Image 1 (cartoon, rainbow, N blue to C red):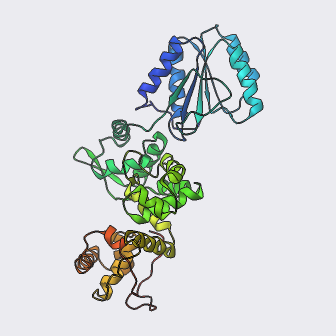
Image 2: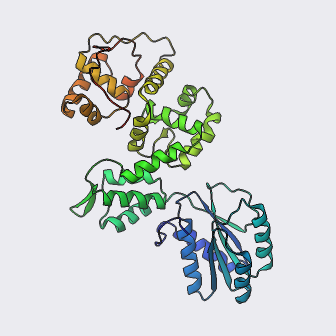
Length: 386
């Protein structure tokens, strides 16, 4: 069992109660605990086993592909009706194994609790299930409670927002908190845990990059374009940018949401945290960024917008605007131009005033047709890495 480190399943109390109630009230029940990776299936099964043993029943714990004859023998040695098998992640895809398992489950006088790795949709399994227990994201109060236990003080402000990166996944939350502690990114001040540095832990950034890299091509394209458009996106506009329909985009959207990249609780498409969006932007090659921005500007102007006049921008303002349009933060722009963030803020305010706009989103959406000052002279350089 390797899903989540052993711990009390804070936030899973109702699921634990439902399983124990079924084991007490249903004759020889078959229960399926279903959820994506790192959703806490293993921890929940451990707690079921502990509580069932405390109730005086015989518990058989196993995972993966154990010896079925041995499992059957252990079940048959126990008192009829007083044996519970907690089985973590059986190899459901093996037809031969599933056939033998179904025979054992049918013949044995026992209760069965299986885990099933997948999203929260019910999928056909080789055995019938009396009850499905779907592990949905942890509620916010459970996330705060777990963080308080680990940090030693309640999280505050920006740290509470950062924990949204975990998307309610117990395993990812454990990873984020461990990374924050190990990398010294949090501190306790006046009885509250606060961020000492507003960045993702290294291990979390690596996992997010790996997660996106393993998604389907359609989901990766959706994530990349959404990251460049704005902090939150209109789904219909995003579909048009991708030359598809909203319905055609649903599978990729669901994939990225289950993976914890997008939030699932807003009307507009939004990343779980802007640090995830920034991480995605930093991974997109610069030519691809410009293509996405230009296509967005063309779409928003319906192809009829007149080119924006940029001649009244100074070279410094133009360099600043170029980088901001590519999705860099003010601090990242400052590092690349070797100036202070205060200077970047000043230039950006001047750009807004001269172009009669008031946001980075509007700046990114403007047609950008003139050549930048000092074109071809490499006045600054930057890479995709943040």
